[in-house]
Image (cartoon, rainbow, N blue to C red; front, top):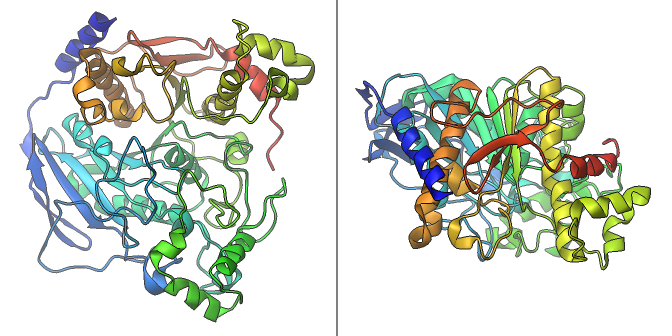
Length: 525
């Protein structure tokens, strides 16, 4: 299997070779001033670019405001602070800088030499459950994208209670502004910033691909369905981003209970305020909340502690987000753009079931068929089987749903399953866990696996990165030297499996079990 992947990598090296080029400048002028980047290995990087004013003081819990212009040339060789959070121990993408509330910065990687001044643009949205994450981790370095002729943009967006917070006093303040989903407002601000400025870096504002993983994939869906983001990007990639309202985060509304009884975001904000001894709901209360130290707003929140009654997460606010994403997709109201979408072979899932019968009880009369689908070897391991079932519910079936929705809307979709496991981890992992595709997508596997990296791992990273780049360039992931990836069709259900031996396209072997998952779906409201 190693020979097949290495042969593929050699073929790609020839196919992706560079031609004639012009030299780009390490100094650029954008709408707020001049920037000086740093050049290394044929790539110019510009880091720590303010795309909005620092969201501190009176701007805490406000829509992002314009960044101030500067005079002279601003050094852009170091990341700005990642957004305020309590880092998650054992994170596979550890932050490279110290978190801070002043965090609304973007980064750009571009080829030092390029054959065109209108290069495709890719914008990355990191994951982390909306409570962790940032643009500084080494595995999110955009250099390999730039080396293949892409202008790559990453950025920070507000997290936790800084990114999602509602309170009656906030709703009354600045009534014309949207409220609650400040993280999504940051993302929209970046999309607009790219439209205004990416040409200065050699990028084409008419050829922008938005992509993200986990919470970042959910964010891509939010941008595809937000009326405020329409027309700001032209292609989308969703990696393990869910897509069903009944998934990890059920629909929540700004100022009323959700259809499943979820508390309003405002009531959750009031509960948080009371936890810090702010009991009124007037402007004075809001002033007190804005004076809280940043650590007091974080209050221990991260991916291990996020399921608490004082944190709302994303909400339907009526301006940024007007309906659940799956309702918009099913109704043909999502952005009609080409889509790549998929999940991993051992994606995120968990179960509280205490027996096989509990795992499969929701299937009713089809429970025996479901047992045969998820436990064909009759292991009886209800925890392992239940986890796989929930992963299908959270990530795998929703990816197929999104592919089908975009296909029905008349645009091409390309579905994948990432099954490749780094050779050093194959004794520990039976499949590819959540987020493990990222260093392969970015071709930053060396930063993730270091000395345990193998030639086969490197070859898979080259192939995966090439598919993502090709899609950004043309809306189709196929290209010279790569196995063919057919466009998705519900009639054939063919996906691309990033398999242990090489990328392989075939009819989804999990179709029956995903059909069973789909049979449990209740219409979203």
